[in-house]
Length: 396
Image 1 (cartoon, rainbow, N blue to C red):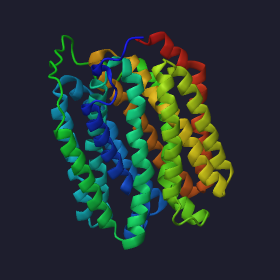
Image 2: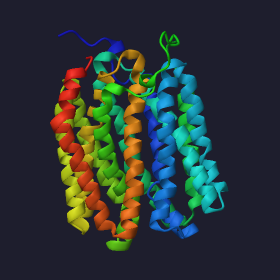
Image 3: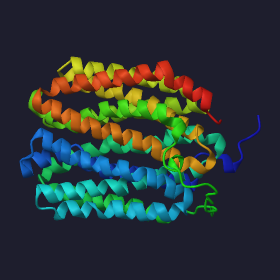
């Protein structure tokens, strides 16, 4: 067997840079995510339903911008699109400090979703560009580790800082500085010049949404709906129902350990071409985690589900991202990435809204059973239709 040429190595300098920049996007994001429901409740007196509405605005604008982000990334210099979107993402953290009312905070939070959506699409598309084709599926899996490690340590750091100083503004400043460091790293990227895509046909829907990936997108909406319910209300649920005041960081830590372990295994099997197998295993494991969380209202259900859901999602997400990439032509990579993330955003937003409404009018337990039911529907749809649809329409 011939030696892999230097150009085929996985961890080249550009890939390392976008990997680190992606870590900083999600670290700064996760510094705030677990504490924002408490912040809104304690600072502005928001109830559960209002918290869901305020936080879902972020997802809504990310959802709206992502199809256009995919189009821009495919049509214009990717580094320019990346730096502009990343810079705006960084700047909006200062808006949280300036917001002095619930209405102003909701406006800032909602607007912040746009540069978040654009920067995640452009950063992940650049990551795919700088990977050698033979290492692409594997690289996509490892790229997701940057999200997972950020998810593991971000909430823990946030809770430690808040526990020591009881100061939300300090967290907002830290999120700003971390994201600014990511912007500086991306500024040093050295990318090959790409020719601008010359559209010889009218601009149509498939320039914004990967239509061939509709069934995979529907599955992702179901899976992220369930995650949206859990991730948004986990801190308040733990505090109100289980008396867990400092355990949210451990929940996300266990979730991320599961994600990291399964991605390390899954990246090797993805390299071997076992995309559908990875997805099938991942969604089944994750489904069991949601069942455990909904049915056991104790420490075992709370922490055990975190690890199991992490193990499942770590197999599932890179497999689905590879599916989207394999359904797209080379000039639709940005569109493929944005379609995946749009699907995720739709589910997260619906999960926040529906979960908040159910928790407010019934209780948390009902909300978590709804999360399990939607996840089950997505799993069944994948097994019955979506995986065969992918095998029929894949380009590579």
